[in-house]
Image 1 (tube, rainbow, N blue to C red):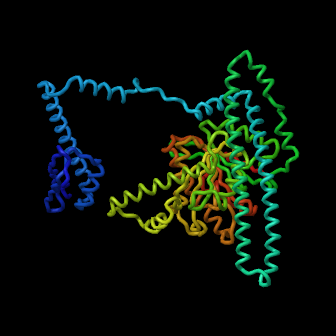
Image 2: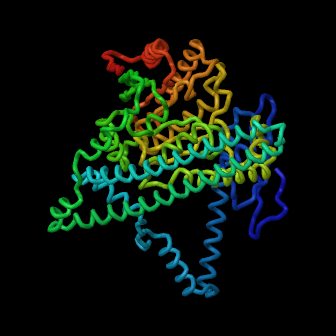
Image 3: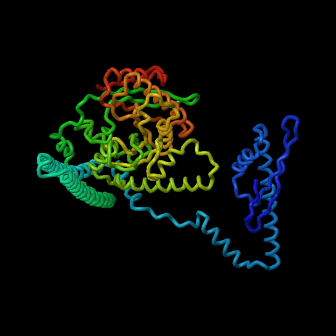
Length: 551
């Protein structure tokens, strides 16, 4: 270990002498250490083992000797400094009043009894008030008001879609006319100009409608929160509670009446198999497993359960919004943190169909995620520059890709969005995967599988007791997904999730959870039943077996 030439003032070097026997040879390690020691003793021990190639059979002995050496010399230095301070105090060299004031200030700043009370934020106040109201007879009033706001948003979205459709039809007609004149009076440059104008016109129209939707959502959110606070304040007054209830309570059948003429969202029968299992070595914990055939966005859209079930589902989601029984969903996305393409665009479209009265809009949450990703990449790059000798574990290609776009994430990483306006979901895990998951030879160490493990750990630490996972690590079927491919992939995910659930005991102490395995809608009935037979075999479902089927 090289000596640090730029020593801090008051720093002292002492030699650590450690002797050990390797075979017939008596060896001695002599290393200068600078006191006070600023490094962690465990890190320092690891560096000594690596740099000096110390045999592994003396690792514990070196750790004990190093800890004892650092502790003894540190206590000796502290005692020496304390004696010098006391001698200066007794000789009158130290200002007693200044020292007393400094001690009193430090005590007041660090002691809990002198700490200033935290001021509750608007969001915290609103959350407490909403949680109290949603568990009271006023819950139906809240749901009816939310439903009215949702109808206003739906009407605006309908106008937007109609105008976009008219624009698209008009542009298609113009482009047809231009293509007919191509080569006669118009050139390729003229066609490109018209296409560019069409694109700009569509962008302007989409931006205008997006601004109107955002403005309406902000107005609804502000009005709703102020109305909830006012309702709670008025209901606290016992003399006015009955009068207020008569004024604000709407007809109980309002939601059912408005949905009576709407078509049912679900066309294909739902296939579902449910199992109750017990996992654990000594202390067994009961968990619920479900195998579902549905689209991943069905858990976000209202109306999946029909007219009567939609209201019950919305009530259940609202009741558990501020509770220890949250529901999560895994959404497989690419490495770009945005909502402009693919499943991310479809999800963002569903998320704006109803105003979120509790959390920021999806676009605002993604902007925060991008800033955090940029900061994390910058911190990681600075550490790699400071320690170039640290092994990168074969991640050079990923680092080069991140240098091109540092706001992107890598496969296996995920970001989280929070929602209160979805049908059955409070938390969405946006798990990054690439085309590699379409191969049939991925292993348990694949980034997508490890990402599942990490997000399950987040579920344990943040009270998410229901999680929905794409069983095949895909939201739709493709040509390469043959029957052997699906069976092999399902077996891998089943076994890995079972192992992760066994680890949950050490993460959360053994809390009962519900894990839903989701397969695409286009999967055949025969394949679904093969998967439903595989699940109890892998999880070793003990009798009696709780099994329910919905067709």
